[in-house]
Picture 1 (cartoon, rainbow, N blue to C red):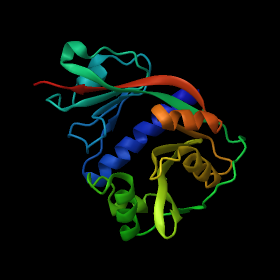
Picture 2 (picture 1 turned 60 degrees about the vertical axis):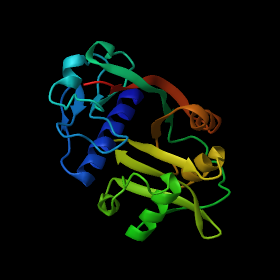
Picture 3 (picture 1 turned 60 degrees about the horizontal axis):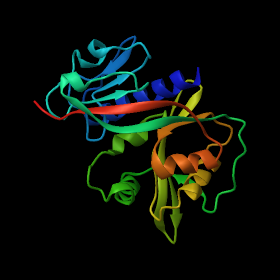
Length: 224
């Protein structure tokens, strides 16, 4: 099932990012969890199956203020445990045989630590320090970018797991997300692409041939 593959791919990406900062998490039958607080913007638990319950995501994690849970199927109610909804998004899917749109700017791989620092600055101003050089050595990961006039103007990270390629952190400095998606897809020919998006990035993905396959909700602990 495409949705389950997208969920698993994203959980593997979360685990991989944790391992670039320290310990990774634990995969169980219904959820991935981290006993250590995860890097900024990354959840402490991710549901892997629709039947996951509160115990699957709250046991073994640091549930103090700031703890976050990605309910991959938007089925849990964590309000009774001191959590509040943070964001909702939609899982997206594009089959490998989808037409590849012509890019306005070619996308290339980021391969060095200075390039990665430049990419991170284009993504968020270099504020979070999320992306560390050891990420570039992982065989399942590619950090991609488009340049114009020597400057990075768009980018994304992709990670491969099983039969799908997951997309995260897609951005366009000028806000032209249709062009960003087109450029990224041109760099991923004949690959089954999955991910999740919200807002303008979701609308742009739909215009580029993605379909929505389900909803997710991220919860954050606001007290305690």
